[in-house]
Structure formats: C-alpha cells, structure tokens
Length: 340
Image (cartoon, rainbow, N blue to C red; front, side):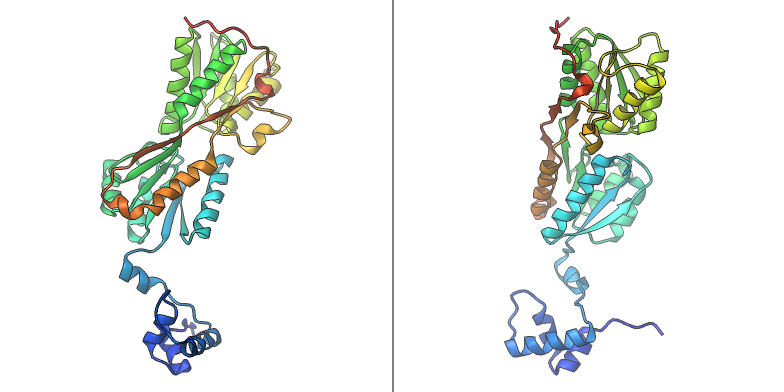
C-alpha cells in the first residue's frame, strides 16, 4: 500500500484546530496565536507534514519556479554558469527547474513541456528557432532570458557578452603580435554567439588587410583539433588562430604541437573565448576572452526581480563588456599594426 502524504486536514485534526488555522500558520504575515502555532507545528512534526505550494501557486499565479533549459554541457563555461545560477536562485527564494535538451543550439522541442509548468521565467543559453515556438512562449506571458544568445519575441531579454567587440579585440591582438595569415575555427551556424564572433573577427581582419581562412569546429575539442589540421591542408597555413571557444582552442594547440609538429606561440599564435579553468593550465596558457559570467548572472536576476513589469515591457538586450586575457599562447613581441 502506497503511503500518502499527511494533509493539512490531518494536522488540524491532531492539533485540535481548524484547517484554516493550519493554513495561517504557514502563511507569512497571517494572524495566528502563539499557542495555535505551537500546536500546529508540533502536529506537523509528528506527522511529517510539509505544506504544499500548489494552493499558493493557484492563488497568486506565481510559482517561483525558474526553468533552466540546458544543452551543450560539455562546455565548462556553461557548467560554471549553471552552478552560479542555481546557487543564486535558491539563495533568493527561487526554485530552479532543470530541463535538458539534446540539441546544442535550440530548445524548440521542449517549449510545449515548459508551457505545462507554471514557471515564472525561462532562462537558457539556447536559441528558439521556429516562429511557432516563439508564439507559444509569448502566450505564457513570462520573461524569457536568452543567456548569451540572440533575443526573439516581445518578452525576451538577451544577456550576453559583446561577442563582436571581443572578436575584434582578438584580431587586433593577433595582428599586433605579428600574425599575417589568420585562421578562424568557427562554432555552429545555429549559434548566434558563434556567428557574432565570426562576423567581428573577419570584419576587423578585413579592415587590417589580413586574410582569414575559416574551418568549422562545432564548439568541441575534437572539432577544434580536426579544424586546425584542415587549415594547414589548405592553400594558406595560418600563423595566428582564433577559436570561437576555449575547447576548440585547446584542440587547436594539441593539433599544432602533436599532429603538425609546430610550436605555440613561436610558429602559430592561438587565442580562444570563455576563459574556462583549463585555459590557464600551464600546458595551454591560453590567451582568451573572459566572459563576465557573474555579472551576466546578476543582470539575468535583475530581470527576474522585475518580472511583473515584463508583462508589458519590451526589454531587448543587455550587453556585458568582454575582457581580453593575454597569456603565453600569444606571447610574442608586439609588432606595429598598419591598417590597410
């Protein structure tokens, strides 16, 4: 026989009080005598009773549930961001609801599932690709925070690093350190962050008069390693490589050293993006772009705190400035930059 949970009626019967007295005991600010409170809490402890939040959700239409839609957790950057989000949400009284998707770039498939929960907000680094999914989310009338992804729809806030500016800074840095033939290891075409990084890097390289060869690495270590080998099979072997995330940059360094017998930074400069923990390891000492994840989380939480106002607001985009972290993988004397 399945054991059922104790109800407020059970507590009221054992405590010798009304059911409404039990409800008032657990409702902040409600009027209840100390004697009644003592009886209710003692009975609840004996029965193992825990008040359900469902009646409060039905009454207030606020669940304090935040759906965190996750994918691509192979990237340590997003793992650290997820941990920061969960810790901050719980500390501030929100309850995270983790929803995993297999797609690295979009969460269209789980939008119907999200609609079945009374979540107060949705946070994800994944994009929404279909118009139908956008409409379903807008019908929920809750804020959707696109973390490091493009915004879409009227109730979406995009909180992201300035990917274009960051990529331009990397191009400037590689050319300043002597690179004259650049290679770009791109991410996924479905990723707005990846597209912005590619656009910023190639545009700035063009302004500097430096050619760029591009290979896709899919944001993964193995992809970065394979893409680097392909760059050196082409007509223009690069002497400076920018990978759209650190995992691909680590793969690039291993390909250069192990597969191609080249030296970093003597033969080829390498830079990445994210500043994951392994980027600073002595074996890689990777120059990279720091995304200010704590500030990005702060901005996302500010959106949650103003969620009530977002039922009518059209928020747009919050951009957090990037920081270029220079390490040994680009440690060459600075060369003069001549703009074409």
